[in-house]
Length: 402
Image 1 (cartoon, rainbow, N blue to C red):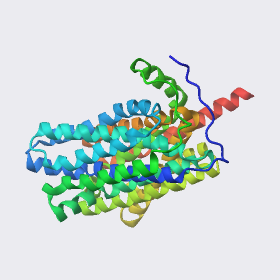
Image 2 (cartoon, rainbow, N blue to C red; image 1 turned 180 degrees about the horizontal axis):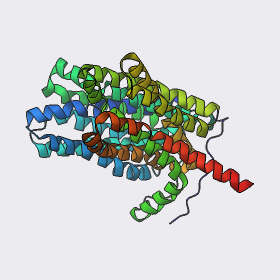
Image 3 (cartoon, rainbow, N blue to C red; image 1 turned 60 degrees about the vertical axis):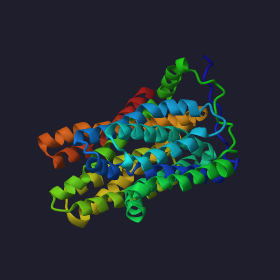
Image 4 (cartoon, one colour; image 1 turned 135 degrees about the horizontal axis):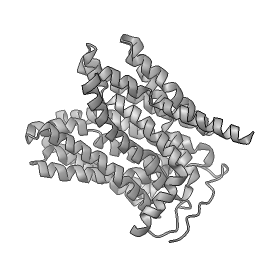
């Protein structure tokens, strides 16, 4: 196997490729606005083909597990492609699976369509994120990644509303027609926007199955601390957010109020990521990562222990601080491994997100035993484990220098 060598990133003097950033970011929005409609589509399947709740849960688990294991493979392949094939064909697969899924005549067909949709989204994200990073000069790397992520967050927020609107407008049976304009947009972006992006920051190594695990292991050693930080952060975010509507109901609110709270949190997270990325580029990325993670539990714990406006405002601010560090960890990973942007992006964001989704299972078990409110309060303390970890490292390193 060839030795992995990393060369410097783009210098600050090199112009940023905003055109490519726009193309990949719009593809991110298009992908996520369809795939994040899954919570709306699954109840339709429960009614149309009479699947059980456990079968519905399995469909969601397939979505999470395929992303967890598929993204590193897609990232490994993407780092060896001169053209961003996966970043264009991935969203097309996602859209096809999502628009056909409500019409699935059986559970087996629904399962296959979920797999198609998940392969699409798992293929897109590593290369899209890697190419968004390579569009930037080093002085705006985190900011470019935050803009790419913000488009995905916006798609996630609008996905359920988008599907409900389309079905009310044209009916469930006509939903697959959405593939036509969506595919045209994807191909237009491919031909006119992203296909000619410069490809200096890709590895010259060939893709070989036997080298995949060795390559991934070497990269993981370089960014392990960032993956740990991202996993704990995402586990906190997912562990609380997925159960928030239920907590709102337990506190006397309605499901509509819970949905509105989630929508407000998603929008706040969208803008917080942009602010965090800009701050990281203009100051110190590690400090931004640690401060945002360290501050977030203060507001999350306050929100979970109060009611009314104070609770809502605190939760929104807490999630915003938590999300502000997301593009920062990814940009730090890309700086460490500029020839493997897609792979390290899949590890620092994709794998951490997949593990965070698995974390919701023990959170649910704990809620059944000690109660939902107490469980979420414990989850809110998780980011401080990162603060304690880094504080310990600083104390040990300063002690070693004396």
